[in-house]
Image 1 (cartoon, rainbow, N blue to C red):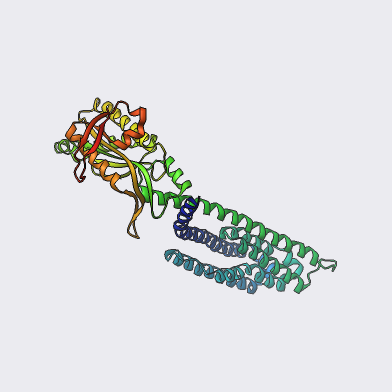
Image 2: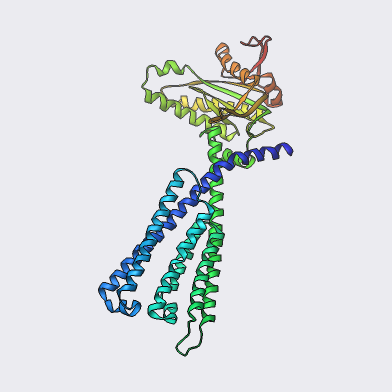
Length: 435
């Protein structure tokens, strides 16, 4: 349990840096959407005011008592748009640098943005009067900022937006002591509106926080998938990827008992010389597709492709108590599959398979910039030598004594080839042939 827990901890530690970087980028992208929406809103409001002035100038006189107030609003909206353009530039710069916006700057920006309706409201109280200005359309502008605050994906920023909006509206109502036509104060009415605005800010924050959690879950899954793909290659099946993501993989080396399989195509180079490069690639890809699919069904993975062959593992990175049985079953099915394929093609291919079962050191090996999951040890070397011995014996599937022992009754058809001299080994090695 301790070993498993430490492996999970290492797994999450490796993912955390990439995860945080990608989550920051996603938050900045949604922030860009929010800023663009505010810029568009400011431009639309300026166009709307211009259209009203051109169509019915009397409206301008009734609302702003002449063009002076309208010019002030134009100035505010223009300054607001320029401010948002500057914010947009800052966010794009931070995106390029993979750097988040400072928290203080976010809150200051929120204060400035959300104060725009408050400033416009103050200007209108001077021309329309407090009660009419507070009952006019400007207080509704607060909801634009509240809705768009969800794109910040931050509960506290949205809640702060609601607080600034509510405080702005209530402050204007208190300062100008708005009253209705009978002279009765409307402070309770505006206080309720302020509370509603504050609640909307909190709800927007809750929605934004939920969106952030969903983004985080998606990014974490994608980051884990990318890491598995980088370590084990694109030839790992989706089912294996899911299991690897659930179990995690160790960062260092672990000693494991695995079945190592080497597969090589016989006479492929000679046959390729008389064919076009495209024919060679198509033939090899077609054969690999069938063999790798068989590996997937038996719980094996291709650790690496080796020209016209590959190295496959059973029992790593996912442990399997029946690794040797799985490897032999896969090897037998590969031979049958190649017989079927050869009967349907003008370019028949024979394969040689060598399988050995034993201990290896398995882990992520390589430079700090590029690591690859692989296995090292005598088990790998002997499996490779067994595959090469197929040429000497004219066979297609050779296994070691450890594999034969692990098979038990399932290996009753194994033919003992005796003690064989193997290159690189001082003592002869017991070799068995399977059909």
